[in-house]
Amino acid sequence: MRNFLRILRLAIALSLGASATLFVVWSRRWPLVGDASVIHYIGFLIEHGKAPYRDLAEMSMPGTFLIEMAAMKVFGEGSVGWRVFDFTLLGVAAAAFFVVTRRPGSGWFAGVFAGALFALVHGRDGLAQGGERDLTMAVLLLAAMALLFVAVQRRAWWGVGAFGLLAGVAVTIKPTVLPLSLAQLAIAAWVMRRPIPVETHPARVLHPVWTVFWAGVGMAAGPMAALGFLVQQQALGAFWESLTGMVPYYASLGHRTLGYLLLHSVSPLLALVLIWFAVLALARPRLDWERGMLLCGVVFGLASYVVQARGLPYYRYPLLAFLLPLLAVDFAAAMELVRSRLPRLKVAGALALAAQCVGGFWLGPQSAVLVHRDRWWETDFTSSLEQNLDRLGGSRLSGQVQCLDSVSGCGTTMYRMRLLPATGILLDFPLFGTPDAAFVRQYRAEFRDRVFAHPPAVIVVSSWLYPSGPDDYKKLDRWPELEEFLAREYRLDTDWKPARTQRWWSREEWGPGYRIYVRRSERIQGR
Image (spheres, one colour):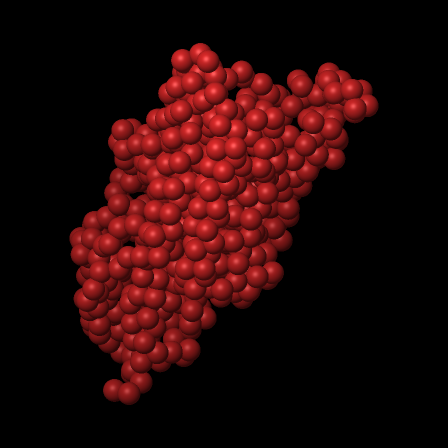
């Protein structure tokens, strides 16, 4: 039986390793699309003198821009560089998984199981999830916890400080992660007040005061860097306005039902999670400090996913970053129970064995197949929009194009063409919100001052309203004043609709369309 289990672990590891390798190979040429392309565009605009929040209306936190701009400098500004950054994040996550799953009974296998499945679930989520800020945040939190594991095991102050540093950087992406880091720090401080219970190590302790001190020193670095960035950009006041205006308004949009959220929070891993519950009930593993930290992460990840309420795929990465190693450790430990004489433990071992086979021989290869089926080369929206903008003037349109879009692809095209926008209004969902909201009225007033008073040469309107519709340009019905402005000042030059479906993730669907409006007084090249 022991040899059988070894061979089975090796076969599962090879299957997962091959699936993860295929994901890397098949996704290496994915284009830069979605949120990442919009943040890239904002980074490009910052480099050209535009200040976030002050000149560019945005809801992302400062750390998002700082990390993205650093990645653009290190890996390059195009799609290849962004794929390398995405793979780097997954590599760091894999290393962290090996650290947090390294314990008696699991060995190397649990790290392979968790790391490969995390990468493959990310891959099956599709093109638009590459390098997402929640992925970056999840990897930072996971790596921070891995360093805290090392700190506890060695009573090392430097590990606590490094934990604080990475956790502080994660806070600059989404401040809501702070309670998780504080809870994990409290567990570590409680454990490290006692000597290491291993004879081969010196009897070191780290007083809770020093634990908190070194973590606080590290944790302050990220927020201080973000604060310095805002001060340097002269955008501190504008950031506060965004934090109290756009952020809560955005948080109120596109909510899903609780049932939908609970199901989709673990939907790719649902079979494994159900088996895990059964294994827990039968094997009853001991709650130690390692499991405590992982469970804190699971609770935080699930709560974060539910509270954000939109159910977007990348929202679940913090949950998966802590759930997968917990599953892997419990399955690896319970797998050995198949040799037990107690029926309850033998059943737990058989279930753990089945779960690992499901993950290794079904979920992993299935995810790789889904990645292979993605038609990444079909970028019809951005390709056709770029052709039409080239026809209308190309680089001479810089500073004369206003997008009425959020993530459909207008910003992506502007970034590809390196065109400056007519205004810093880069998101359209506040324009078409309910006029009862004070923020919507303020946003529309700003649009009037910048666009109505100084009409740009070209306005591009996407058909879909982020985050939950409506489609087919019905968003324009929500603000008749804008429709009247377009009819009075502009003529419709292009009404583009996709001629085929696109498959950028596990579903095949129709993408958005766009309309190009040209100001009536403009002389267009070639006409």
